[in-house]
Image (tube, rainbow, N blue to C red; front, side, top):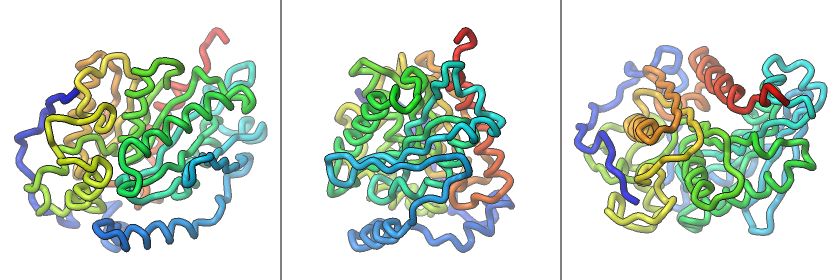
Length: 343
């Protein structure tokens, strides 16, 4: 299953400075408290804070529902446009067929595989549902190290199956469902697409991958530790991948679907959009995966933002560069979820 990558011998960049950031992002990152994940008590504190997030105040015309699964700590948060939202959203008509069936996105939150909650992305999910007129289903999955691979991916598969089973009752076209996620969620979305391809059955029509965490071999590089990337360092990355894999990082042997970038044959995967900043720790592995997808004949759009570090789209939400980034991603997704012209 192991595949090569293009940046195996690329030297580490120099230590990051605030001046390396895009001018619109400097203020947000100057005061941003980097997540602490190296100790269990730090992760528990982070999760306790996330548990205090209130139910979302969705955009006008977007309904919210939470569905808990049988397995504790798993479920989905569902954002559904109402008819009113569809009538006013300028981009909604392309994602809804004449029969009224909508496209949908299965979204997976980030957090390095060790922290995070679906609720952290509620505002973005609600806004996307309103703007595109699609149903957005956000996955709650179990976290490592208490629940290492394959538990988080299994939870994403369960959410995919729930969405497919519930599609008709919720006015969703099961043939027009994309998968996506940010950071660790982007990596899980890529792994989900690979697993669904191999298992057969319903397939996603697209992959929307924000700064995806794709390759454990990055975490195995100790030369990257001194760089101190903004928001997510390689030492944090080591904690995330080690907790998830429970195995030596960068080893030749890796279990199927555990590390998306390690898959040798990417043929047959759905079109992908990969967005990442050029000073993000994951920049090189993301571009290497994009290149591998293209080599396999998979359409892949890459959006690299100069001076943008990891998670800038969540940390600097009001910046113009962030709005533009989201707009490009949204337009790409809307085109992939558009109803067929002959419907």
